[in-house]
Length: 148
DNA sequence: ATTCTCACA
DNA sequence: TGTGAGTA
Image (cartoon, rainbow, N blue to C red; front, side):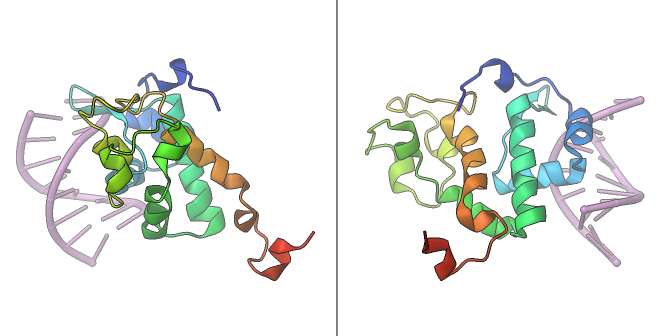
């Protein structure tokens, strides 16, 4: 998992991002509304980074291949324990207590958190890891998963 | 010219 | 989800 600042630079307009990800601008805004991505704003206009583009691919994987709904995916992402991933040890962080909050919203203006923005945030990047979970490999979910 | 939000089907 | 209205 890399925390590449370059990959976090907001450079693509929504049209370019749409083209590169094969996702309509309409849906890109929808994913943002759901809290999956948070592209930067320049003069009120969205600017997507390479990381954003990667997350969009990840979102499409769950939606298209796994067959999850946006609602289900929302629960899935929100359930991600950011304090473990970051290993920040900040149990007094709002993100630790507020189950329903997107962590990057909860940590806003929180001096205790070592990650202030989504740029280079591990929470953003870790989502890709879930692609490797057994239940998302197209295999059946059941007792067979626990053999071997 | 492009993007934004909101609304409708 | 795509499309159109009305802005900025």
